[in-house]
Image (cartoon, rainbow, N blue to C red; front, side, top):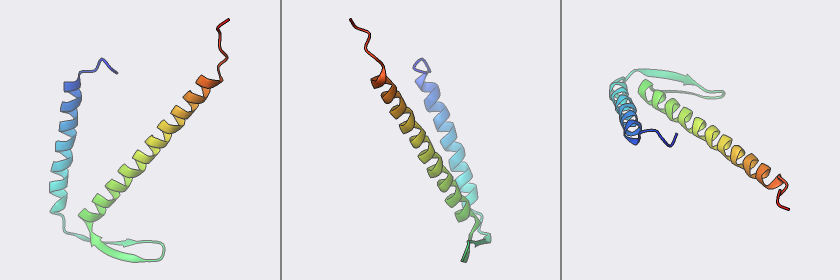
Length: 89
């Protein structure tokens, strides 16, 4: 992974951000009201707001899962590194 071209990474990130901003601009013009039913409540919000809310909820949950996976991986790696017997004699 260290041999990847940083320019390619930056360009692909810029393309992804541009696509997201275009989708955001089109979604902001959607003023349809939708009814959202919760377990004990119900509310009426704009469809664009609901889509943005669900996008960020998914983003945060994926970020949390990735950070949790990374922490477990580091913990197991550190644990296995300290449990190996020394081979020096």
